[in-house]
Every structure is written in C-alpha cells, then in structure tokens.
Amino acid sequence: MRLSGLISGMDTESIIQQLVSAKQTKVDDAKKAQTKLEWKTTAWKDLNTKLKNLQSKYVNNMRFTSAYMKKTTSVSDSTAASIITGENAMNGVQNLKITQLAKTAYMTGGKTSLRTKTDADGDDFKLNALTKLSDLSVDNNGKALDLSTGTKLNIKSGDTNVELEITADTTISDVLTKLKEAGLNANFDETQQRFYISAKDSGEGNDFSITASDEIGNNVLKSLGLDSASANKIDAQNAKITLNGTEYESNTNVFSINGLTITAMKETAENVVVTTKDDVDGIYDMIKGFLKDYNSIINEMDKLYNADSAKGYEPLTDDEKDAMSDSEVEKYEQKIKDALLRRDSNLSTVSSALKEIMAGSVEVNGKNMYLSDFGIETLSYFTAAENEKNAYHINGDADDSSTSGNADKLKSMISSDPDTVVSFFSGLFKNLYTKMSDLSKSVEGYRSYGNFYDDKKMKSDYDDYKTKISELEKKLNDYEDKWYSKFSKMETALAKLQSNSSAVTGLLGGS
Image 1: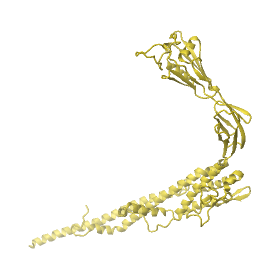
Image 2: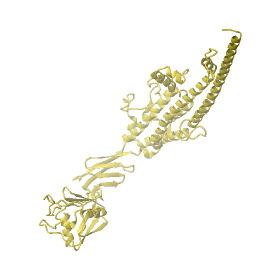
Image 3: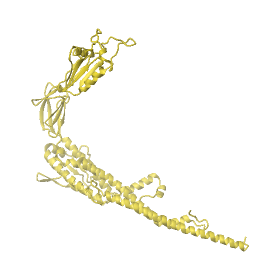
Image 4: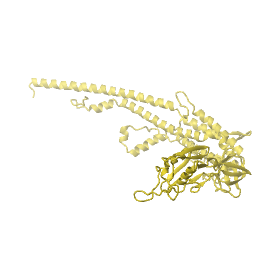
C-alpha cells in the first residue's frame, strides 16, 4: 500500500510523478511513433490495393494483342436475330434468312374426367395422382376400363425408350414417374384434369411419343386423354437458317458459325443484313477506363508526396484527447495522416517509375511513338490543377471538359489504323507490366511478393515498438516503485520519530 505523505505533509504523488516524468515521456514517444507507423502502414495498404487492382484489371490483359481484338456485329432487323461476336469473327457484310425456328415437343392432354362415379357429396369425382387407372372409364358412356389382363405403354423420348406395364393397381403417379424417367417434363393438373407433357430440349432429335402395345393400351391412352384424338401435341422441329446461301440446321435456335453466335428469334421472308466490324468504341472505352483509374492513382500519389508538413504534430495521448472535443481530435490526427507519405522515398520510386513508362516511347514498325501521337497528353503546367499535372487526357473525350473540344485522334486511329493502335498499346502495357512486376517482387525481410511497399519491414518495426514499449513501461514501473518505497520508508521513520518524541515529552511531564 502506497503512503501519500500523511506524516510529512508532502504531496508524494505529485513529487514522484515529476521524478518519473522523463521516463514517462520515453514511453509516450515510443507509443506515438508506433501509432504513426500503424497509420502509415494503413495508408500504404490502401494505395497498394489500388495499384494491384490497376495491374489485374488492365495491365495484365492489355499487354496481349488479343485484348484489342474486339468486334461488334449489327443486324438490320434486330427483332429477327441477336448476335454475339467472337474474337475470330471476320469483318464483312453477310445475308441471313431464318426459314424455321426450333420448337420443343409439347402435349396438352385431353380431359380425363371420364369417370361417372360421384363423391360423397354427389359431385363429380376428381382424379388425382393416387387414382388407379382401373377406376377410369374407357368412354363417356361409363364403360369400365378392363385391366385384368394388363397391357404396356411405350414412351420414346429422343434416344430413350421406357416401357410402362399397366395393371389394375397402376396409378396416375406411376404414369408420371415413367414419363419423367424417359427424360420428359410431366405434370397432372388436378384443377384442369389434364396431363401436361413436354420434352426438356428443343429439336427433332428430342421429340417424344407414347404408344400402346394393344387395344387395351389404346383404351388406357384414351382414358388418360393421351391418345391422338384427345391430346393436342406440338411436334418438335429444328431451326433452319441460310447464311450467305448456305443452309444450317440446329436443334436449338442458336448457331455458332465462324466466330458468330447467332440466336434466331423469328422467321424472315427476306434476307436481313449482318454487319461485322472492329469495335472502335469497345477498344476506346478500355483505354479510357485504364487512364481514368491511372489518373486517380497518380494524382493521389502526387498529393501524398507533396502534402503539407505536419512538423510539430504527434499522435495524442489519452490525457491530451480528453482535453479536446472529438472533432478537434479528428482534425488534429488527420493533419498527421495527410502528411505520413510526404517525401516518402518508396512512394517516389513507384510514382516515378509509372510516370517514366507512360511518358516513354514504344517502337512501332521501326518508329518510336508516344501517347501524344494518339491524342493522349497531360495538360500544360499552368492549366493542370495542383497535384494533377501528371494525369493524362484524351483529346475529344466528351466527358473531359479540358479536352472535349479537341479533335478525337484516338478514336479516329482505332478506326483507320487499328494495327498501329494495337502494337503501341500492347507494347506500352508490356512495359508497364514488367516495371510493376519488378516494383512488387519479393525482397527478403522487406517486401512480400505482389506488394509495392515494405510490408514485412513495417510489420517488423511495429513488433519492435511493442517490445520496446513493454521494456520502457517495466522500467518506468520499477523506477516509480523505487521512489514510492523510499517515500514510504521516510514516512515510517517520521512516524517512529514522532512517536518517540511524544513518549519523551510525556516522561518529562509535558502536556
């Protein structure tokens, strides 16, 4: 138990805190340095994620010429067919005629309410899945369906044949089970008292039939509403198209022909025109999308590197926070966070490397070409906003107020000279890929593979601070305990002295 100057009258707590204040400062300084390192690591993690996303979303793919093999196909009558264009599709104009659409076999059964019996309320008896076929009548006159000798039904669906043996105990559910076993969709609607049956796929090869082995079986089909006289069946058929004079046939309405995936949607009396060409907008939008993300990252890096100094600002202790409002604390700490990567050497290395690649040349057919040759440039020093001087703008970009009024050279070149565009940009992105891979390679003790900052070193330094803080706090506590012990002994000695003095005074007759 620590004494507090009861005998001496001294403010022991205050004196000791002054004595240990120097060591407390060392603890606070270490904690502040650790906090700044934690904030700096968080800032780098955020920036690192954006760099990796830029690499995976654009750079990794745009170094390949195949990324620019974008084509688009239009149809003169968009209600007749839809077309997906593959990389191998050939540019040109073609004639398409759709002579027949694919159909799926479908049967709507006739009503099976042939039974003359009524239920307990006198209402017509309704068939259900558990109704036995032997309880059905063979015609509207109520003639009983005789199944005493049994019969068979054959269900053929595509290449599948299933035989159903009918007995007096066979139920509607059994019939449904066999239909499904044959690969058909089948249902008995108790409300409509009808069977509904369809093939699972379109095309002649997936058509189906249900036939009987004898006259009894024919009566069963009639009772179930599945004979040709009762049921309404749509036969399956293949789709047929003629492309450039050549006929093609498919069990579905989808045809894959020479890089085009054609989906027929309606029959046409005349040819419709199919036009395939390079997708200028698709290539343009891909380049524009990259530049938008690149600009966002490079502007952020410049802002972080050129941030105002936060000299004199250090993370707050708990006592310092208690003396401020939440908004004051947030504003104070944000000042420090904004300056964490100011003049950061690693940031400078990454940023400078990206800028160097983007400003560099790519050889195309023996000629060195630059982004400016495609109408992509940075703004002038005096026109560009602060920390946006390294961002690229596309001349003629309708979404860019700075350059929308200029001639659109990029889109024009994609349309008129796609080979040069592909050669340049695939080369540029190969250079970017190589540089970014080098910047994010693993470095023992400093950086993990795929990261653009020294994550391992930062983690190691952070752990070192934890150890250092623990050691400093132990020294502080020991030092504090030492002084409390000294003051405690002093108080004890004074107490004894006071007691002895009182005793002497008593012996001498003092009052």
